[in-house]
Length: 119
Image 1 (tube, rainbow, N blue to C red):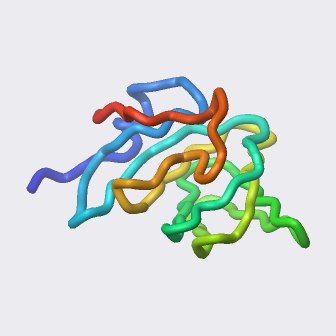
Image 2 (image 1 turned 90 degrees about the horizontal axis):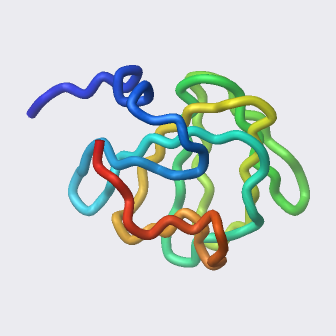
Image 3 (image 1 turned 60 degrees about the vertical axis):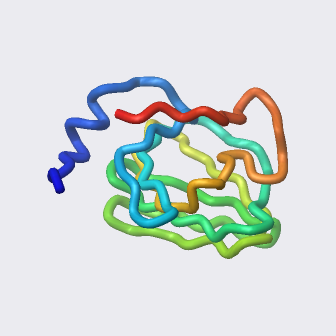
């Protein structure tokens, strides 16, 4: 039962699109990730996905629209909804998702990270 300082955890890494685990709640991981550039189109067939923007501005593209998420805002993407995160500048995001969630969902490519680091 130790508190977690999100800013200090974010200072521990610089790489983009590689989530880091900072905690566990039931069968969920709490993750931090830094994003910059465009991700791939993907969906999660079995999990909803929560993005909370800690620093910066994130865009999530959907097939019919793009949603901008500012600092201290979040978006929950229901399972099965195709999406593509876009970060024009560096963005720090907190993710809350089931332990089984693969960052690239139904796609596997160079962005796919299967064995995440705890920090």
